[in-house]
Length: 168
Image (cartoon, rainbow, N blue to C red; front, side):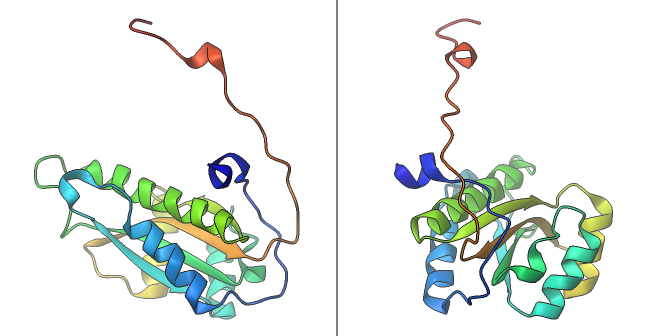
């Protein structure tokens, strides 16, 4: 529960590489997310090449921290694995995977931030070209990862006025 309540978006990182074992745990957490019909319509592209991180930051206006990040993980929707009954559920599935990554990063003492990609067509196309993604793969989000170079206090965001019992 602490990892959930204490998680904050971290955009400043130390010049320190995250070991592969921690990246594996983050990916394991992502793939443990619930998905509609257990379709697991996700693929993950791990990026630690500084030139590629810089290239992403130049095409995505909210990704300026990436050149300083240890890694970025691009969460992609795999349209060959989308739910056969309700196609758009892949969005919720990839969101759950992204959130699990953020929580695991927090639990591992890492800093992370969720960078929305879908449905920003220009950013999606840039990512598609940069990484030569097949047509059936949709870049959904990017998780920037690193050892935090900033501290942010937890914020209690619970708001009783947004809770409704049995009727609006």
